[in-house]
Length: 241
Image (cartoon, rainbow, N blue to C red; front, side, top):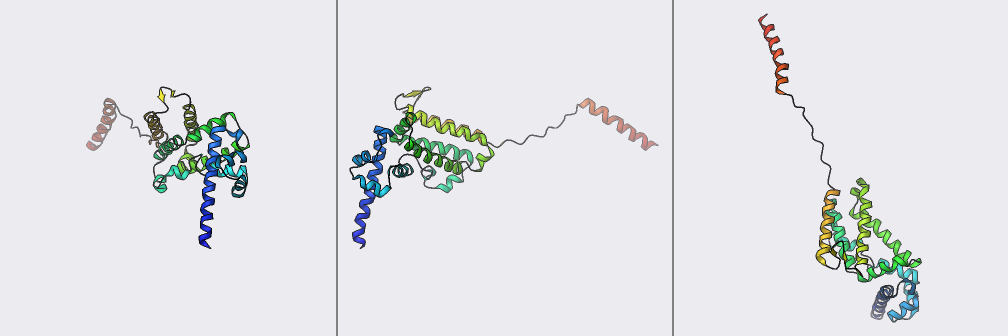
């Protein structure tokens, strides 16, 4: 029984992988307007019946693809092999590390960049599925990397959103325009410079405010003599009496 089941299980897993890979290829090459069960089946070289059998339909297939890590880096990927060590870091370090790994993850996904570019000009029910996946990812990433530190600094959230959007924009722009603000968006060294800027900003954003120093009022020497001398004179008169 087990020897007969194992090959079928492996075949199904391999077929699902081919179908999910085909989703990304079609989206990147032809955009959302061309996505469909027939197109994906031809790209994966499978019978379309298998797509319905394994995934249920196009919306379910796209949702599975969006959650698979092929399109968007998961929070587990950004946390790395030792999540607890990352979560134990100071807030500024977590903030900087998130952006360093987020940048690297998107740069390693050229298909994702192509799809992000297509989303800007074409929105439909399928793009909405991926938007929902990213919103859920954003909420989870914020809770993990920000936590209570974000709660105490609500202004940091807006800046974080702008930085996340900025990374995506620069990567989409780099497809056709290489230089932005004097930085070469296709050079590792220039992206490293941007990461350094984020790290320096994080150190300031999460710095604990210094306790106000207590200021001691200085007394002018002349005034002190005028105040103390009469008191000493009065005590001396009292002793003589």
